[in-house]
Image 1 (cartoon, helix red, strand yellow):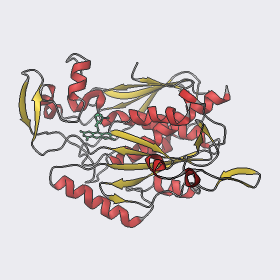
Image 2 (tube, helix red, strand yellow):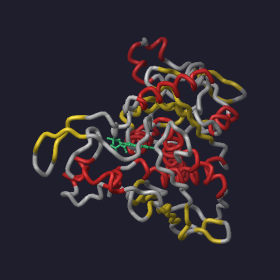
Image 3 (cartoon, protein in one colour):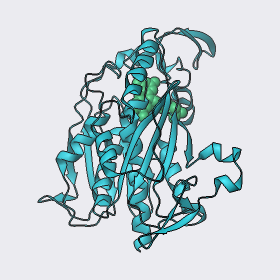
Image 4 (spheres, rainbow, N blue to C red):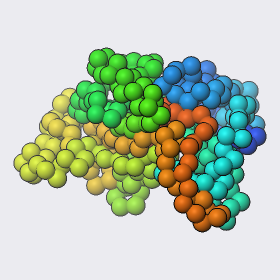
Length: 361
Ligand SMILES: Cc1cc2nc3c(=O)[nH]c(=O)nc-3n(C[C@H](O)[C@H](O)[C@H](O)COP(=O)(O)O)c2cc1C
């Protein structure tokens, strides 16, 4: 089933953007884990649109109700189920998308796959809103990983043509990742934030949207986690990262650029530091043969510009089989990248948690 993922810890995500509620069931968590619920709320607030003009005007508080699997402040070991109510829906704005397909959104593919029975309101199950429960699960995973000394953090690497300073892939510390997690525009170079905001607002003022890249790092992961082939760190994380709506490319380490350099430059030369094997460069993004080598895991995800833009566009009416011109209504993010940062961190945390549990068996 498409809504389920995981081998040792299993995640089942559900809900529609304008339905009663969205949520997730997490099965396979160890019992006796004390969760910091305030920290989970803080993670959800990072994804929520807030009052920023950079995000959708749809305001949802994203409060969660824990329905099962948590008792007297500890996980019970049985399925942990949470729901997040949808409170702020304006479904009439989406009536025309039942037939008139938004270019680059999932209206057409959803209609075909579910034979027209899909809940198209607000994008239904394809909405970015469904990433809220993912962030809940990621926050739980992060708390478990942090007890093993593993941290995950990300920054906005680029928006349109504006670039931040990249991570130093050999040397990323916890204080940088924590600082980024408190920023409205998480960037390493403060000057980039203003230029990125400008790019988003310029597109928005023209009824348009922009995309960008999120760079993520996982630090403290010991060498030896992951498997060759199908359960490699890269293949496991990529499946989760590509599940995040609007992610269209993922690259690890030097990524596509590794094809432009020679072996003598690409090879990460190992050396011993305090009895530990490190590498002088990290072009492989901390993964060799699908298995962590103890260096930071570094990867980048490219997100497309928000498909729902208010500029008039050509499209099709799926019922009358006619070409039409459409003007999209509803409330939309002029750029998905900013809100996607905690979502991508969450996807990575879920993947690493599952791999850690597999490796412990
Ligand atoms: C956090 C987040 C917010 C999003 N907000 C919007 C939005 O406001 N409007 C929109 O059209 N798409 C938005 N999307 C993207 C769509 O959900 C996505 O493009 C669509 O489901 C098609 O999937 P695909 O782009 O992965 O092919 C958002 C995605 C995420 C992760």
